[in-house]
Image (tube, rainbow, N blue to C red):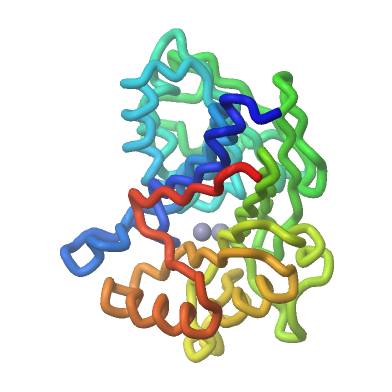
Length: 282
Ligand SMILES: [Zn+2]
Ligand SMILES: [Zn+2]
């Protein structure tokens, strides 16, 4: 029987789609310039993935709608994925709670790493001074995360300097993978990661570069839209969603990448800030 929550399906809202550094300017307005932050709703159940600069606006929305608790899943601690956290209003508000999950610190929590960001003179408030109830959970990428309310999120280690964690969310017969940041292997899609994403309705994929650009960026820990297509095809996935856009790619460049990718694999989109993708129950 379909529940009211199930009827809402699995929804993905992009609050930040950029990699490396927030990027302002009219020429970036349509795709958006904030760094990685994605809201995932499994019915009414909220997860936030990554705390790039896009999380500041999401925090305002979550404060205004009275959301009492946020589970924040970090892919890793590179600056573009945590730089918005000091400006995430739910963490700055008494009576709210935030649990920060991190899987690339050898099983330790992200607390020690984040304490270096929440540290004068870089930021005036230390982690233990945050007014909200902020907790830290460490895991090893590859584990399945179990939450007290029955929610489950699968995880997988990604090929990236200092490691990163990919996530797979499943709800009401639908599933979405978040795979950023990762570098592909020149030999082809990673078989373990392909199995992790097998049959997903959508794959949000680090498509920072094109193949033509990649030869100058080998070892930086990022992938290409062409490798994303090969990966999504190998996994038998539904929609490919290009993500972690290069800050050098303005809207004109993004339009060209998105159009080329859509021609090569119909249904592919390049994520835009403010965009919501809905995967209805089945
Ligand atoms: Zn990144
Ligand atoms: Zn990174």
